[in-house]
Length: 235
Image 1 (spheres, rainbow, N blue to C red):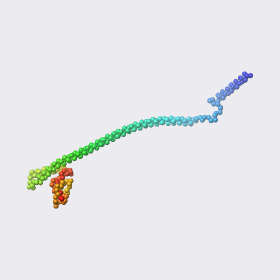
Image 2: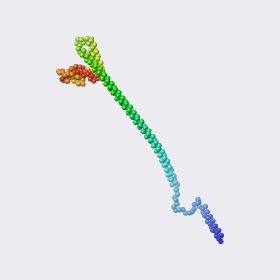
Image 3: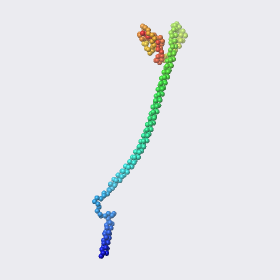
Image 4: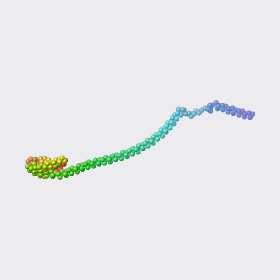
């Protein structure tokens, strides 16, 4: 009896194992008919997976863009630094050029002033020399006039007198050609810039302050007095 019960028990266990195996074979992919949990984990849909891929790609693109922007900023900084260095060098050269131009302009101005000053000094020296020579010639003219004034009327046609008169006229003409002119005195109002009064006289012909007599002729050279006229003025 015990052996029989043992065999029956073993047979039952084998039968149950065979049924379980059959059920496993009938269920596809090893899915059982056990009830699922009430709150199963949510499975990702294709749309969500696509969004995640797009987000990943966008992040990668942003990272690449940031890297490119970093490289561009470095290149720009380098270019700006190079441009600043070039501008600094250009400014220094421009300042140096301006200084040289200013120096050249100053030298040209100084040379122009020196040339003008030299010309004025040269002209002044020439005028001074000319007046000095004229002052020395004027007494010769005075002597000609005094000598010819003493010639009697009957001797005016004498060849010697005629020759001396011609020399006198030639000398006066040459003086006039270089700008020497006699100062008008008799009958003119006394002018201290032109006349040198040595005496006062009474006159019925002229009014007071008028030159009545010229004692020595005065001359100007290019409108500058070389010698004042020596005159007597009506009191």
